[in-house]
Length: 153
Image 1 (spheres, rainbow, N blue to C red):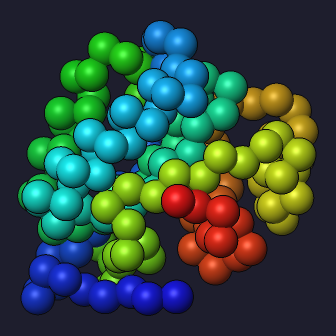
Image 2 (cartoon, rainbow, N blue to C red):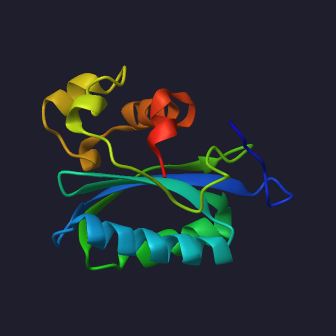
């Protein structure tokens, strides 16, 4: 796993949030969204990861604090989703997903049920917006270090 602090300072943060889609997203819609996010994130040195399941988004943004904050504020104004919940925003030493401007994992419900610490959460059919900080960290760790990292594009 590669990680690096690309800001040259101690101003690196990650922001983890969840939201619910207000519109239907099929595979083509998600592909278009990812293409736009990747292009835009590359221009502002943002990296991260996106999960989408059952009309629910879980996203990790990594970068310089002011850039992440501005991007998150822009995202909260996007009418394609609502019920936006910022779960964690905190300083980090290194990026966990430095090699992706926006990684995306198409993970089944069954695969989510295999992640220790969050398996019971997904077995109950809950959405990402209901994750508390501890489970969000476990999900982050599972995708940062686990076998699911191989499935992220």
